[in-house]
Image (cartoon, rainbow, N blue to C red; front, side, top):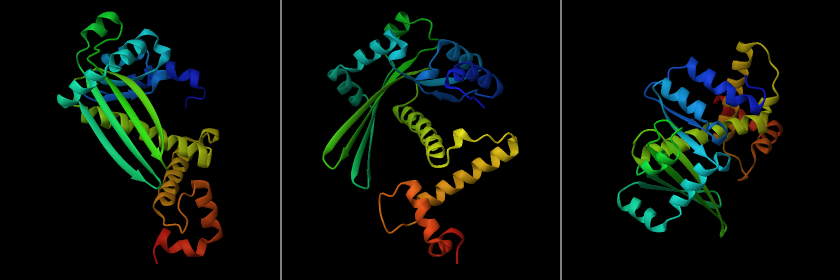
Length: 232
């Protein structure tokens, strides 16, 4: 277990050497976007889709400036290097847009220490919550020339894992768990995930309840929810 965030950068290469990443695509958030980690991925014959933020200096600046060209984005859309999804949930609408470009020789020449840099991507999430718009833009470096749908799948897959981890910590304080026995820790993690699943699928009379409030609601009305949990 990695106890401190600062230790993750040194732990990731060791983890990559322990698992088979051949033909796979490794996704890591911006903190793990390091040339040493990229080198380890390439050694393991894997590919990468890594988030890029300001901590990467001119790499971030070059990519963000590249995607700021509106005409470029239009060309990518015509070349089917753009993908969009629209999701409606509760009182908000979320539009997720993805762009990929493989015209990156100029970038790999400027940043030769990033092995096998073959493409770059941008995502833009626009949320309309009761008429109030918020936007989030993120950038990525990519080592394989896949279609834009694959890029979108990598990004969504990574953040679904991050979201699950965040929920486990917020609802059950999993990051504070000090169980030393590995089997017990594994079992507790499985139980927490099962509980989150129940909280997600069970029908509640009130909408927009947080996971914690759902737990309290069930504890007060346990007899009413036992049939949904275990069947009649």
